Length: 314
Image (cartoon, rainbow, N blue to C red):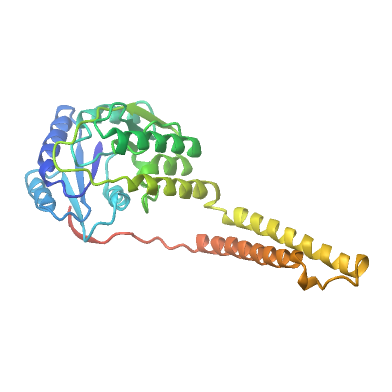
C-alpha cells in the first residue's frame, strides 16, 4: 500500500464526507493505493455514523471509535498502530488541511528520502490574537529548545515514513512534538513544506488558549525527556551529590569549629549552619533516590495503551 491517511477527529460530522471525497479523488487521479483511517475521539455528534456510511461505499475507509475523548495524541497513536501504508499522512478532519498537498508530501518521503515532512501554514486563516501570535511564540520556543528547525510544529498535515510512526510513542499531548520524538528516536532527516491553510468551513475550533499553556508545559517535559529520559540518574544523581556535598561541607565546618576553634561557643544545634547542612543533606539524598527510582521504572516500564476502543472498521 502506498499511503495511509490518518485523520483524528472530534465532532466533525459535517465535513467528513467532503473530506473523504476530496482525498479519494486525489488518490485516484495519482493512482495511489491507499487507506483512510478515521479515529473518532469520543464524538457526541453523528461522526461515527458518517464514517460507517463511508466505509460501506469505499473499502479503503477504516475507522476506530474511542469510548470517550482521550485526546489527539492517543488518536494518532491508535491510527499509527493500524496504518499499513509505506507513507503515513496525517491531517485534521475540519477541512483546514488541503488534500491536494498529499502527492508532493508522498514524493518528498519516497523520492527525496525524508523520514518526516512537516507542513508549514505560512499564511493562516485564524485569529491573530488567540492563535497566530501565540503560535509564533510557541514555535520559536520549540525550535530553540529542541534543535529541530521547523516553523510550524503544530501543523496537523505531515507525512512520515512508515518506520517512523511504528517506532515513536505519542502520548499525553505530545502530538505537537512528533518531529522532536522522531529526532530523539534517530530519524533526523526532517523536512518542511509550505502548505495551503483553509478557513474553517463547518463547526468551530476545539482548541482554546489553554492549549498553549499546556504546550509550553509539554515543551519542558519533552526537553527533559530528550536530555535525561533515558538516564534520569544523570540529572537527579548529580543534583543529589551536589546538595549532599554542600551539606557535608557545612557539617564539616561546624565540627572543626566546635572541636578546634571555638569549643566553648554556642551549641551546634543553635547555629543556622546546622539546619542548612541538615536540609541540604536530606534533599540531596532524596534527589539521589529519585534518580535511582527513575532508573528502575525506566527498565521495568510496561507498554500500556492510553485509550479504550469501542468499535472498529477493518
